[in-house]
Length: 347
Image (cartoon, rainbow, N blue to C red; front, side, top):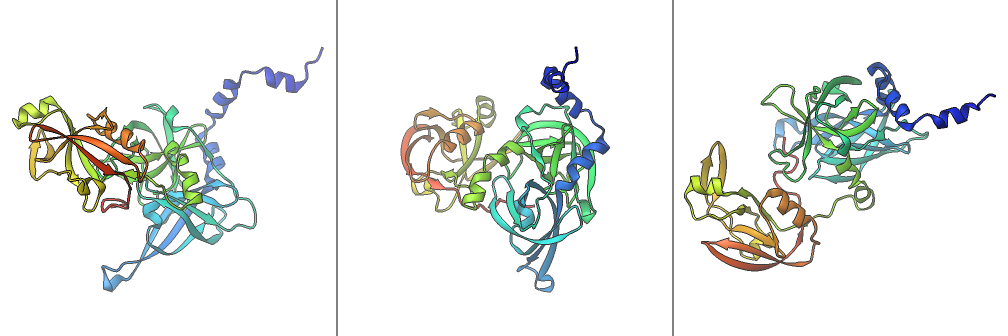
């Protein structure tokens, strides 16, 4: 008796399909994904250089919806006087910024297209493991459609100036012009948006996990920005080891190093550090308050601080507990909306 073909297909376990798709040649993967990758050309006005008023910036992007929505880095299009996109077909078309987020360095663009475009499939960055093979596709140095290969070298990397968003580290070569292009797994799914190159070491690049991008897409589409709660302070963990080395009257908690001018924390009287001390190669700004709790929840690490702050809402009154000169104090402040900060989108 013959078994219908479709029944045979249904009888094959789903992982068999996934395994087959994830073992296709790199050449096939490139042919499948590259049509969704675009080149971005931006003209910016440089007010700081009278002799060079106009600056040309090139980057990459990836089409995520067939109607012309494109993801790229915010730093690529920030301050654009004009913006155009070159499709894989060679067609060049104007584009506009729908929304931008300086925390994740992500921007959502829209291009008007008379026909549907090839769109990439967004994957699940939480499923990545160190050692997984990945490729970066983009337009480095303005060159058309280039693919580089590597592995996931690290996960949840916290970088200077990007402390609010853990990143994917990869050794897949990422060069100027790759910014905003996709980091793709062996199944052809976008797992990251390439965003940062380390100039201090070879073969170290970073990408925004795509799950972080997916989490804010709706906000970028509907409001053009992401509204985040903000207390207006910056610090780091202070543990007993550091305390013993410094020999200062510090207690375990979140050492407040910087309090931003005009922030909710400043208006509530929170104090930042005033004395720079280097401990085992790490610089600490001491002399400020130590945050120990928000709404009664203990704060010991940077992740504790981010998690608790994220649960707050702008306009909400909240209570924080600090240690100042060894004395416990409670302060009340009104949560603000995070503004664009000086360190955002710096090169």
